[in-house]
Image (cartoon, rainbow, N blue to C red; front, top):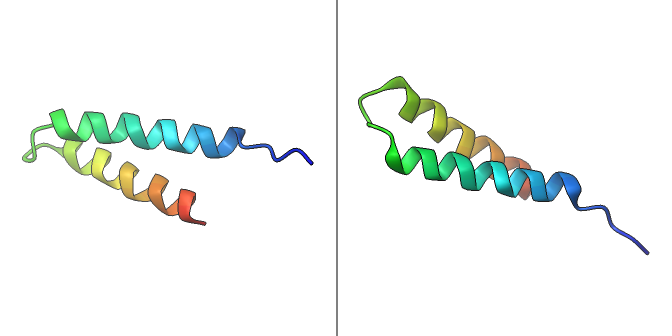
Length: 48
């Protein structure tokens, strides 16, 4: 039985990238909020 994990892997990569960008973003800028929201969204998708 083959389980396709392509979407799962893409979500993990997106989460890693958003987290990396979040760590380098200035908390006073809108970019920080966007990256934080992306991290939360991707984490929720992975949990589902």
